[in-house]
Amino acid sequence: MQPPMELPENPPGNRPEGPEALAPATAPVRRRPGRPGRPGRPGRSSRSSRSRSLLGRLARRPTLTAGGVLVALVLALALLSLVWTPYDPTHVDAARRLLPPGGEHLLGTDQFGRDVASRLMTGARTTVFVGIVAVGFAVVIGVPMGVAAGMSGGPLSALLMRVSDFLLAFPALLLAIMLAAVYGTSTLTAMVAIGIASAPGFARVARAATLRVMAAEYVDAARLARRTRAAIAVRHVLPNIRDVVIVQASVAFATAVLAEAALSYLGLGTPPPTPSWGRMLLDSQELLFDKPELCLWPGLAVAAAVLGLNLLGDGLRDRFDPTLEGVR
Image (cartoon, rainbow, N blue to C red):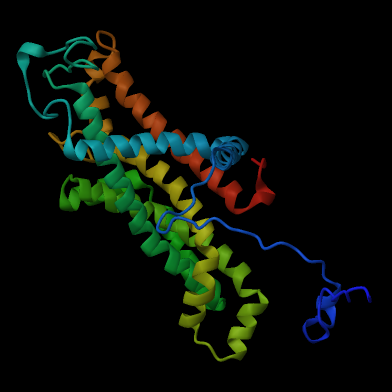
């Protein structure tokens, strides 16, 4: 008897050819069907690593972090005062005058029985509003002037810079006195005076940054492409000077806070009964030795706001230009 003939594992007609013949045989992988509509959730390790990276970035920039925290506190007080204050900040209650801090009144009451904490919160709103409007007014005047001077050059640039020098000769206090003599004392007068006094700083910063941008090769390419001056300014100049304008705005905001407090203290800013930190300092001046805490709270508020804005400006400068980090 002949032995049974063994059949090949792969018949000639089904034998793979080419690279598939060299590939090892593998068992099919069985995959578990996923649940539709339920995306995967990141694990605890990924969330903790992101938290550590965020804390690490904040720790590497303590100036920016500290400034941001102080400014956020001032903004939070201002926004909270729009919807809630412990008491009416303008309500006079002679029976509760000069109460010490604690109890029903967290920071006490002033000589007219008004709640100090409520007036401090409303004063933060006034200060933030005056600072935003004044800085915005300065940006609208100073940045176009600086960009035009940097792009034009020649006699027009010299003329615009002389106008900036002329405005720089009038400080905010002198402008406020002049405007108050003509239009009367009001918050609007203080905002316009602070804005005009801050505009030359924006003009100088914008002009210096524009000169650097105009020397770039992409601006030369835009000129060869027959782009207009307005198109070059909008497409190339303004986006590239944005960072320095933001830093200048934070510094100008701190100056506006000080100027508003000084004008209100001199009676040239926000008129009563609207609370402001400068007006609170003026009202508590006669009780400086009897109730020094009445001067302490608005003074600390002004100091915290100015310090936070200055730290924020330094931190933003280091963030936008790392080559200047650590240089003072």
